[in-house]
Image (cartoon, rainbow, N blue to C red; front, side, top):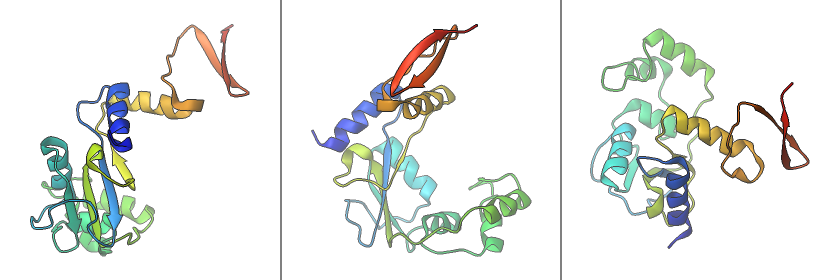
Length: 177
């Protein structure tokens, strides 16, 4: 079993995920196996990777979504074009154009990180990804925050009657007064 397949299995088990982690990697050539023939948005590629367990490769040429091209760094889209594109019924990222303009102006400009963005199930990747997407519910998100907050990232159990303090890399519990 590959290291990434083992990691994906661990992540699914510890967080009780419904879907496996989806990995993404930027590159100058489509290094992971993935189809470049089909035109699709980033959102569509995520759904396909998640539900069909396939690896997808995207580029400026096969990603028709201006928001997807912008946020992946394939093409920096002018904010006046981008804001309306991410408020449509099909790609409703923001509630209104004004909200989109306000938010996007505060965000750092995306950087070009490669000509291709390959995404698919983490277990199918041969090389380390640049990003991993986890589809979680609020309880799972809370658990993730707990796991990354403590040394060793071991599962953390919260006991309401105790106060947890971290001292010299050890967790000690003291009764609350």
